[in-house]
Image 1 (cartoon, one colour):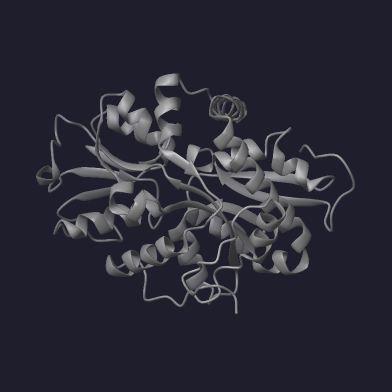
Image 2: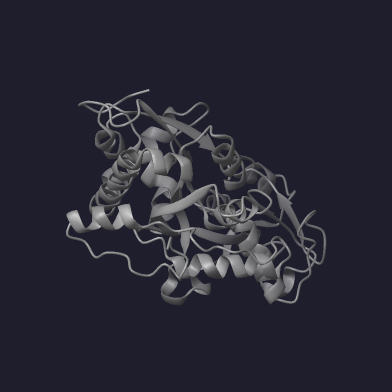
Length: 332
């Protein structure tokens, strides 16, 4: 449990969740022992917690085991709706892009082959799961959202297990984030769809930072320090891509059971992700609509899910454009 230098902020330690994915490189690199997020926290210790997908991270926020977490849009939407808008706020963006539908070209050569195929997503109700179900619905393919049965079979498999499932032939493809998508491509898969193709300007929220409402209210200085670390880490990732890839690889390899990614996986995966401070609120609203449409969510009230005040304070200090678009979902 490393800390930066200087006195602690208003609390001695803060628990921060993230996934060991390139779409979470802001956290992976920023929370390294010498990372910028830790530096911004000063003497307040950062306690990382690693998750496979968003629903389990939301459970940790709700139980008080995690104070902030990097997460995708749909688990944040689901968690906020289920708690009646009383458990979390989105306080910053982190990343856009980095998710694809990749398939075995021997069994799926085009959209017409998705009927009867077996496809994987990381977890029921996670961001890629909703994206796949929504896309299949657009193609006229019906899938039971709860058990994944239907015209196309959808299996929920942790990212770490997807490559083995692909190699064994248990799945015909997967809608997954980086670097899992690049791992499958390295094993002979082909990209059927880059999710960016479905979004205006090719940008959509894949990772943002949420804070527990109680922690945000009690320790805004700590949340602001983490947000400042996010903004500065994103700038470093964008300005130093080669060093960023090396730093990400080193940190992932240091995790229990972790290992470095080869260049043929790491390079294309990093190129597939944009590190952004804007949480891209309009795309979160669209993700919510998709979840409702495929039967994973009843029409939610997302009023107040965003509190971008600390982010805009940091952006102003960094002489960067402030974020004025919250899709009408900001705290009033």
